[in-house]
Length: 290
Image (cartoon, rainbow, N blue to C red; front, side):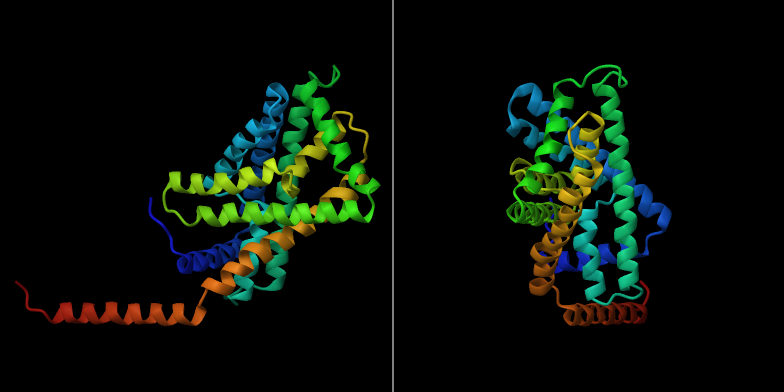
């Protein structure tokens, strides 16, 4: 598997962020919708494994399969664009404005939420035989997760909200590390290996991922969890989104940009390469034909 060195990685991250800003509304929404739906299905898969085996570690080990699928298909998660898009704005790439950045974030949020909600409805139907039966063990677990991670945080007051925020920061530290690590290889196997490790870490440690929560909490409500939509947004989703934003920019994007990206040197190097190539082309034209 070929390795992409850090300096080139930094440039690829900026280019990826720039491409996402210029992506059409249709493509942005479709790719975000599918990302949310696939990641939600992976979360349902992991919870099902944990309930059926009694071993949460096994669920955490297998959860990254969803992340790998959506990444390889070119779909977009909010956690990823939180890290990549600001770099294109900081690097002052042409056409990348603050308005474009916020537009991208807003569209990806909407698409991720719609996709995750679709999977939540599908799973609620499956786990209750079309809402004709009480939820099975997996459905009951989903309801309890929602209660503990909304009302549980609220009951702890400031300490609960601080814990939620820090978990969200550390979540996107790991998740965005997975996104970036996948860009360090040009092979499918290398990308999967690089993504799997940090995603496993975040899931097993119980960090707060805004898109995973777009599935867990709506599914919990549909399955009879004793918390409300207001509880979900106030005591989880909004603080989680803010923490994911801070974690992705601070611990991944900004660090790689600050230590590895050299905009002026890259431009000079590209100019020298073009000049060298032009020189070789001219010399070849002057060679006599054989």
